Image (tube, rainbow, N blue to C red; front, side, top):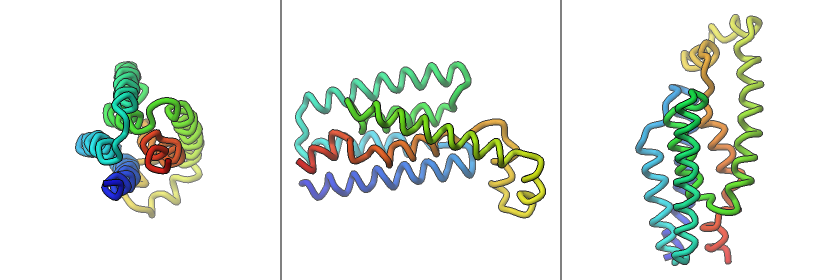
Length: 169
């Protein structure tokens, strides 16, 4: 059964990468990605025979992240897809890995903001006109594909996830 759980951890990594790529290229994160992350967590936790208290804590952290994400969305700070992805990843991170995840995500978001500022400068517009269409959209938009920062934070802190630690222990 652990093999299934390991496969679902790999699926987690692949899904957050797909979410990041989708967000960078289209400024959208499909709902199926967040839903798949949630289903994969519960399937992986069951396959790994994670204790019910650990699963309950993960669910509570995920719900808190969803509420926080909805508030950020309501104030137009992040997009709806970002809020759902944040909650799905928070489910995997649970307590106490949610704290390093949020820190890594914030740091990645700061670097993303600096890159976007440079990318959107007048000097870069000449070079970007020759690139792929999605790069031009990225340079012209006022928004930031925060799903990329969430994915980086998730991948950096995945080894600290209680599910991964349970599998390793």
